[in-house]
Amino acid sequence: MSIDEILMDTEEKMEKTEQHVVQEFSGVRTGKASPSLVENVMIEAYGSNMRLKELASISAPESRMLLVTPFDQSNLKAIEKGIQSAGLGLNPAVQGRFLRIVLPDLSTERRQEFVKLCKRQSEEGRVAIRAERRQAIEALKKTKGTAGVSEDNIKDAETEIQKLTDRFIGKIDAHLSQKEKEIMTV
Image 1 (tube, rainbow, N blue to C red):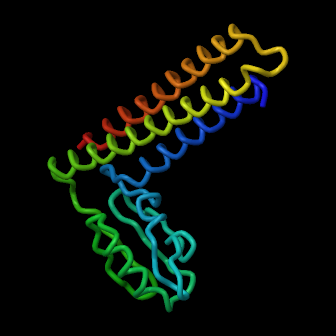
Image 2 (cartoon, rainbow, N blue to C red):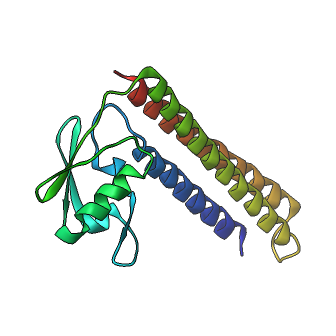
């Protein structure tokens, strides 16, 4: 693997890590209803675990309400049970052919719990970014003996990898502060 390939691969992996952190943040509740809050809840249906978004359509008709309409009505009770046991503090109410989920007001303590959860998720992202940096530097050291690769080339590439690491950790921190602001806004 050439130095350029290592740098491109590392940047791509760091980008995926950032996207994963943003995806994790979308599942953390803020003051308003969002389908992403429940779309990844695992539901036991058809003999296996499936994501809610694979079993039902999810909409937010009001700012504090979600409507879940199963594609197959026989999964209604399984979806209700899955949402209740997901640990989100939500109680869906079956109303005919769909589930209505009214989001309760968030207390200050609950908001702080969500902020802690987001901080933990962002720290996991930063750790993953640093692990990518470590792997890239190890890959660079393996190129040392190959043709056309000098000690200076490796040092320059290590500097570039550190810049990438700093940039992506900064992006994760920016996403965290934005999500923190969303959660704490009443």
